[in-house]
Amino acid sequence: MQSTYAPIIEHLQQQSYKEAEVVAKDLIRSNPLEGQAWVFLGEALMHQGYGLTAKRVFNRAWLLDPEAAWVNSVYEALEQTPEGVERVDIEGLLHVPRVTVAAAILARNEEQRIEKCITALYEAVDEIILVDSSTDRTREIASKFSKVKVVPIEWRDHFAIARNEGLNHIQSDWVLWVDTDELLLEEDVCGVREIAGIFHHHPIPPVLHIWHLNQIRGEVHHDFSQTRMFPTKRGLQFWGRIHEQISGSLGIYQEETYRRAVRIRFLHDGYDPSVIMKKNKIERNLRLLKMMLEEEPNDPGNWLYYGRESLLAGQEEQAFEALLEAERIGLQTPRFGRMLDVYKLLTHYYMSRKDWKQAETTCLKALEHNNQFPDAHFLLAQIRMKQADALYLEADFHLKKAKTSIKEYRGSVSADYQIGQWKADLAVADLALRAGKLAEARHIYQVHAKRYPNIESLSQRMDMIEKQKNLLNRPI
Image (cartoon, rainbow, N blue to C red; front, side, top):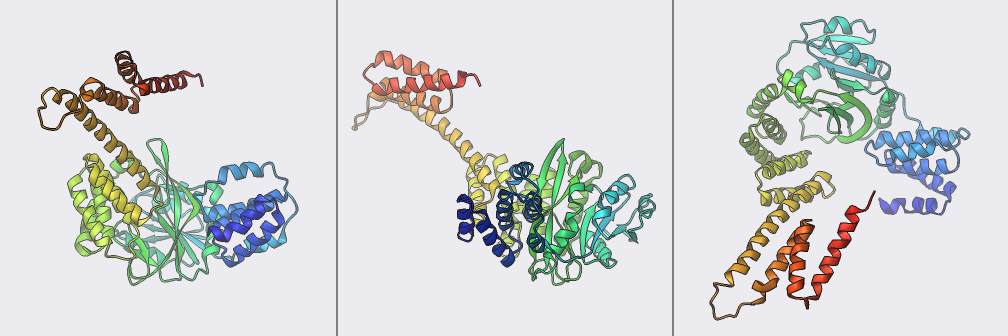
C-alpha cells in the first residue's frame, strides 16, 4: 500500500498540490473505501484553499477510519483555511446512494432510559423498532414517537431470537442496533445514513463495528468491538443466546462477511461496575453461556465469553480452562476472529500468577497471529520488565555468593581473587545504577575509588551519576 501512496506523498512533499489531488481522486475512484486516500485528497484541497470541501473530504476519511491519529491536528488546520469555492467534481466523489436506515432497540423494563435513547436516534434514522418484553411503562413512553413501532415479545433467555424477531418487522435497507443504555452523539446523526450508503453495494455482506465511549468509573474507554450495523436484505441474522453474533443463515463461521469499524459514536455506561452489579449481568451471562456451551460445545466464541465472564466473576480456574478450550477450538476454526482476545486474557491470567514464562509464550502467540496488535506489545514489555526485575535479584544473589564463596573455595582451578576485592562490589553497584538507585551506586564507587585509584572505569561511572543527578535536579 505504501508504494501506491508514494506518488501522492511525493507531490505533497514537493507542494505540487494539484497533481496530488489528481492522483488521490484516481485512487478513490478505484477504491472509495480507502480512508487514507481521502486524507491525501483532503490535504491537497486544504493547501489549495478549498477549506469547506476539504472538511467534507476529511469527514469521509474519518467515517471510514474512526481510529485515525490525524483528526485533531487536521481540524485545527482547517480553521485557518479559507472556505474556497464549491468543488462540484469532489461532490461527485462524495456522493453515495440514498438508503433508508432503521434503529432497532431491544428493551426490558427501561422506562427510565428509553425516551433519551430514542430522542438521540430520532433524526438519524427512518424508523425505530422497539423489541420489548417490559412490564413497566417502556412501551407506553416509546409509543409517543411517531417513528416507533413496538414489537412485543415473550423473553425466552435468548438474545438472538429476540433480535431476529425484530428484523422481521424492519422495512428499511439497513439496521442499526442500539441498547437503551447507549446514546448516539449528536455530531454523528448525519453520518448514519451516509455510512449505510457508502457500504450498501459492497460485494460481501458488510457488518459494521460502532464506536463505544464506555464510561467506567468516571473514565472513558474507547471500544470498536461491537458489530451493530448491517443491511437487512443480505441474509444476515443473529446467533447465540448471549454475546450474539451476526452472520448468514448457515451459521457464524460458515459464510464470509466484510467487517469494518466506522465513526458512529455512542455514549455507554452499561459496563460500569455499579450498573453490572445492579443488573446482575455477570450471573445472567454465565448462566446463558453455560447453556450455549451445552448446545454448541464446538463454538470457540462460547468458550471465550465463558472464560471472560468467569474472570469478571472471580472464578479464575474456571476461566483458565475455558480460555484454553477457546484457543484449542479457535485454532481449528478458520473464521474465528477473536483469537487475540483469547491470548490477551490468557496473558493476563498468567501475569496475575507471576508465571512470566507462560505469559511471554502467550504474548508471542498473539504477535504471531497479528504482529501489529498494540496490547500484545505492551503486555510483552510489562513481562520483560518483570523478568528483568527477577534477573536483577538473581544477579545480586550470585554476586554476593561469589564474594562470600571465594573465602571457602578450594579447588584445582584458581579463582579470580579480584572478585572478592572489588569486582563483585562494582557489579552490585552497576545493578543499583541500572535500577535507578544512584546514591547506593555512588557510595560503592566512591569507596572503591579510594581503595583502587587505578580502575579507570570508576571515574566514568561516577561522572555518569553526576550527569543524571544534575538532569533530575534541573528545573522544568
